[in-house]
Length: 313
Image 1 (tube, helix red, strand yellow):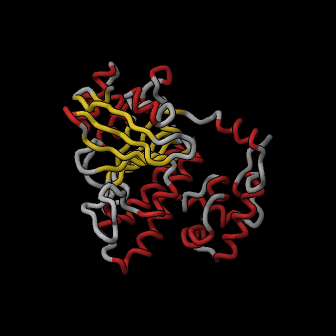
Image 2: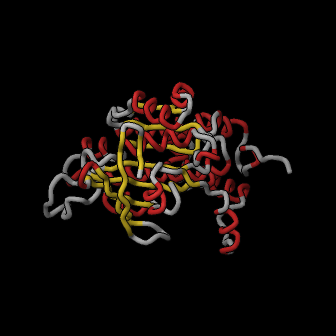
């Protein structure tokens, strides 16, 4: 069967196809799951035209109808699991970090959120027989925490070439929330050239928290954050990739935030993240992970260590 092109979508001629390509909508599925407002803005076309194009793309991509549970089960066989390096933590989250989903790690400063991200980045580049994904990795770094030296330590311990591991990890520093949102589009372009099965955003909310201050800005913040989360989920679906985000917690209990261990981002992040894991320091250098939310797993806890060599039991 011939692969469909953008011009196979009803109402899309060469001129609009070119606009779609320039706005990083080179895939019919990406158009089918886009929002009319986004498509209209990025391609500089009317919203009515954008809605028609999205409907046409859904027909071309054959999505939008009902499926049986059996069909969904068959499709879920494509899902991969990426090891964290700790068997206890893997078991807690159902065998590893799952593709086509968003895994959120939240906790206070020093709870090892970034260390888990480093370990996952290294593990994703490993061959599949070593629990990896044999893929490249994208890291959106909003807090300037990426350290190549740490990647070298972890890769050396696992017996793989540290330079080759670093070559497969693509890092972009996000300077503000709008730049952070834009970097997901850049990642979509990169995924056309390279096999990317893991995207890390460390941290998801720090720019949003700093830029949208006070209750008056809350609605706008949540709107932009909502779009960002859905862009991440779209990337996960289109590339069979795992998305891992880190998040901060409210600094102190008050009438607005309540529980001090509550992650930033409210219901928007809570409803869009597939799995939510709370991290805290334990005794004797241990870390405790608690699964707070998951569509199919019970709540529970796992204990792991962060060593010079990486994440271990």
